[in-house]
Length: 450
Image (cartoon, rainbow, N blue to C red):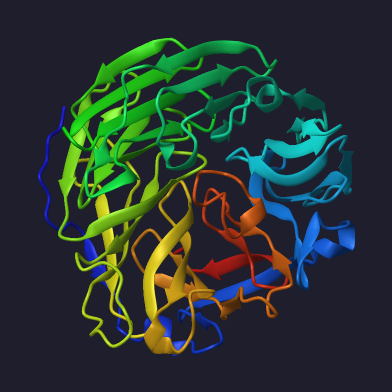
């Protein structure tokens, strides 16, 4: 077992103007070339769920999926009466819906989608195998009256949490449901409780969280009593059996896609543990805060937002905080933490949306007030595993009246990278895609050291 206290390891600081230099356009590092492979306009394939002003409302995500001929891009779009699957080198597939949909939850690898909807004046959800087109009625919300969060795994299993908005309720309950829609375990948390801020009795301070491996092999439930600072963490295997329980860690958590590793992070500290034994592997202490974690679809890489202790900056404040990414490719390597930092007058920290198995990352840098833009203006940034920014996209404008589609509000995933703007990254990092405010695009990056 490794136990390591780190300050800053493997720092790469880019030149200050890199993200700013592109202006409203794009920037590509010398020696590299960005090739646009395909552009998709979703409205060409169906009727939207609804309209928000002039914006078409759809649920949509972008993926790379393994095939016998290598990884292929896949786009999944929820329309008013069907799910459309667009895949590289394949014919368009349309999967009819019985329900009237209003949103979707995607599995991390793009193998399943759970369509949330209504039919016959009741909740009526449909779980769809995107490889085969098979559709199963998913009636747990209607039968139980639960709200809360649902996670969808690439093996067709799902996990439901009744903790509801902000995970603040008592008692809490989770259900582990297999691909045949049998409940393998129903776990009730009767001891979580809540406590009230005496200055604001309506403010409940206890919190709980649920994180799930993409392949369904591991589910980890976390609970924190913010009055006593007591932490309680329970891990379940794919069959719903309890693997381990601990109170040694606090903060947010995530699980690698195969369940082999769990990461806990709180402020500027994070821990990596063995997913099936809870053995501590590494502990890292940074000078900067971590947020918005995402992990690779294959392998064991993950990435965090990195930002200074002062956090977000308001207009008029000096922008002297360090911004960038922190990422790990091998959780067993005690020297495996990598950091990219940069200073920018106009663009905030990179929010990682996708990370490849080798540590390449595609994420967004959001406009700061000093740029004259609002938070609906952003740029996608591609960073290789050496910490070099290789590509900065043109401005992506999500403002009403500029962006054709309203997508993020219909992507109901609790995982931040799946519940927001569509994007994708091939497992080797050579291809990527994102929504540019008007269309869905896939690119290939060519160069000497991707």
